[in-house]
Image (cartoon, rainbow, N blue to C red; front, top):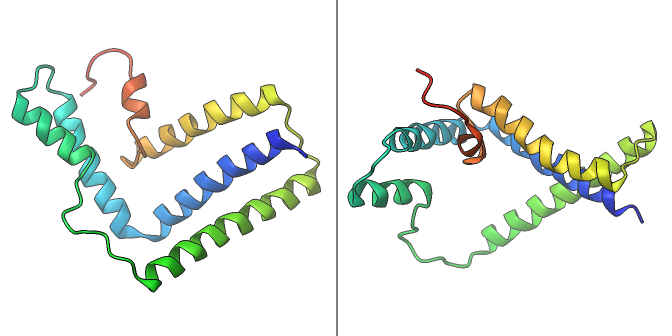
Length: 144
């Protein structure tokens, strides 16, 4: 059992499916751009008031105002998403076998650390970065 290769396939599948979702769903792209624009505005303020800190957290981690309600449609969508994910992982397994790609633990650790950073760097060029990963790694001051 190749645990290192499985970990690489899971990371690849997660990010590729996320990129496919971004490409085909314009609503998600617009929502992410608006959220990132607000967060960047708050990040540029070096000393925030308590109200600004609360607003930053509300934008970053929005609270759900409605109670969660079980529906069969929701359960079906979750099952379909999980099925698509594992089918994609199996497809990647066959691609890896076809090209003879094997990963040792050293390569896997490097891949798992560097691949998300690379994806976030590419997405940041389009203002679609997934998380605060790139803002934490920015060295130096604001570049306007």
